[in-house]
Length: 96
Image (cartoon, rainbow, N blue to C red):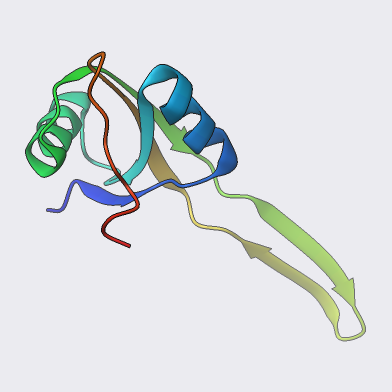
């Protein structure tokens, strides 16, 4: 079971990483905070102080078209916000 799926690189997440040493990741839905902490520490070689998790709900959308009503949704996922120790950082742009 792969714990870390991918890092979240958005404007808000990048700003949070530069100011507060917090990094966001999409993680496995069944992973708990201890498993996420161990995975980040082993993958990036940093010491993790705090882990916050969020279950992101799917966005549902309905469109009215010529052929009828079309409904759709995005996938649900689990987000983890990881705070690393002061002075340490994770370079997310080297492995792109």
